[in-house]
Length: 515
Ligand code: XMP
Image (tube, rainbow, N blue to C red; front, side, top):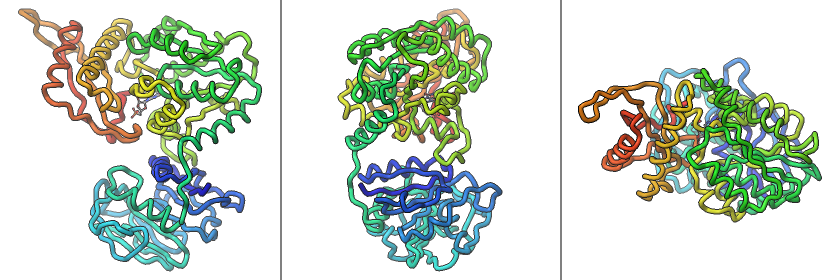
């Protein structure tokens, strides 16, 4: 199987590059940016891509590719930092620029580089850089420019290609076509990658890793852990798989009952349901800090799981999790370990999970996939479409949707409001058009009037976004009448809520969740 190697220098979009390449039907793998490119590593490799980075090339501690990258003879494509690093390694010069470029920028194509085959001159790219190339370096020729900066360059002798913009980002017009030009026209890769092949690959990996050992999977009822359950039950003997569902009390309305039905339908042999809602609420009393909430919940999950360990589970059992690649990158655990921490996801951040990970006793078959790829995989496995199309739900549950301290009263208000919102979306056939929708209960009250009375009620924020992978998100453009009607349904049915607002912030700059 032909392969493209991606060297990760810590960019938030490294995995997007990988996804785009896989979408093109070509297998690719991500390696730390500093990896030595050995003969072994080069097996079946058709080209190398160097990612962007939160660092500037001139910064202390900035990651550097190993010299071997430049002597393979294979085509190398540098993107943003990767481009600048490649030219600097060849005597180019990069400096902080006074004219920064963030967002959309038109690109003028200067030469007939294969990268721009069939790409229209003046296409709109996506830029995100504050540094500029002042000198291209030995042998490089400028092949495209944006208003203030070199946008692309090539060094034909060395087989090096560089792009200042990010073709992997969906906002970059013709980005996929440019990557396809690199992968097919320049690297001459074959299309030989799909979800069935990925399933074969991870099945083999899990079989070897788990051997005859027992595996415990914490089920949340969401898409990720459901797909992991499906994979495990397909790959390992069912008697070795233990499914445990911990009811934290922070789940959506009726979720626990729905999960019980789903688990039964899976045909698993060992299922355990633990009601720990009282313990979670108790531990979260008085806690407002979002990172603290995540830490408490993450640790409690593991603690309860250890206390409630099903009989028959050996000491060195494996812990399986539905960790996604996005969880890893946003927690600063991208492959190269150079990404900056945006938000700690509980299944990454918890010291206890970390201990299992360090002991090599963790199975995370989805840790290279994005949400939409997990859905594809789930469908390939034959998992119920209703489970697969559920909106993503964060591990810490409603705890990160009650801003500030969590109380039983707030939890019950939020559960009701969330159920009403989702129900309205389903009635309007909008649920499947929206990537994720939920309510957030704010720690403020506002004045209202009902009949002749003054009321002092909670403020509820609605959030609904469109996204492909949760890395970026656009606000869902409801019609005004939908918003007005949904707001009325909520305020009419939940007397404690005095005001409903709609969050109209995309990601970036906001994250999807409020905490
Ligand atoms: P953010 O808020 O980071 O969300 O833009 C991106 C996606 O991840 C989900 N999310 C989490 N999932 N544990 C999880 O398992 C977490 O701590 C967590 N925080 C956010 C969020 O719902 C969205 O789908």
